[in-house]
Length: 357
Image (cartoon, rainbow, N blue to C red; front, side, top):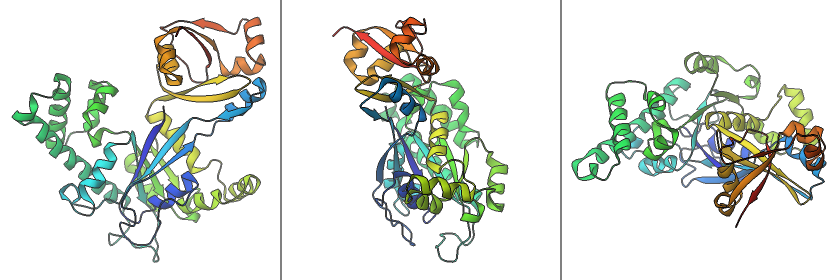
């Protein structure tokens, strides 16, 4: 599976610049005027994972295949979008299609880049976006709870919609639904306010290490857990360099990891994702799965026939695979296990599936 992150925010906060940096492309038009992005741009990016190279060396693999993440650059939202302002409902419909939301927040001053508001205020800007998404949810909930439509809504979804309506109308934290219902049911509800969120504070070059007054203000309110400080301009500069130049430049400005690496780490955490590997002479490959995924479901990521005909999974942890120098020694050393249908795959497992067709 590949997960899809939608980059949202007010116009001219750096969404397209970040998108181009993350995807190492110039797909998204980055210009100094509102709504320069109209149709969403989509970029599929290989997920960096140092474990892949190590596994490939041990297995003497001919090729390495990373798992992927998709980024979607969505047009800028403005106050009143839920009522059709700006690109309105078109914008909101694009958000419904993503697995998680990257809120791009302007945390820099610039006389050269227009701001749709008279001043820089990251908390106000985020509240505008979240209010519009909540208003869109409110409209959607009312429609689905109308008598003519209600009979087509499943009982569990009715409970979700009614609880969400109560939260929105009474200014309660809608995230309480996440403790009441499964992730699968909440995803099926299609409510924008329930999508996992990452906050990206876009700063200038001098603020990339320690932030600034704007990022401090934002973090004081929203915390660090889902917040990143990134300079979209610097990420673009880094992507234009070759590997050695990139390392030197990052060291010079005090960056330990790229924005892409940080976003992927946050994305995997909030979406509760793990990675397993397959490794042999032909290829070493990474696969993305949900946490607590059973072995047959993991096999189904490779091919549906693997899940249908699953017998068992030959399983070695990443560390044991490397220290044992591959499959043969892992088996000889007693590090390889045969796991059945109830086995919960762990992050870093190296798997070989046995199945009937």
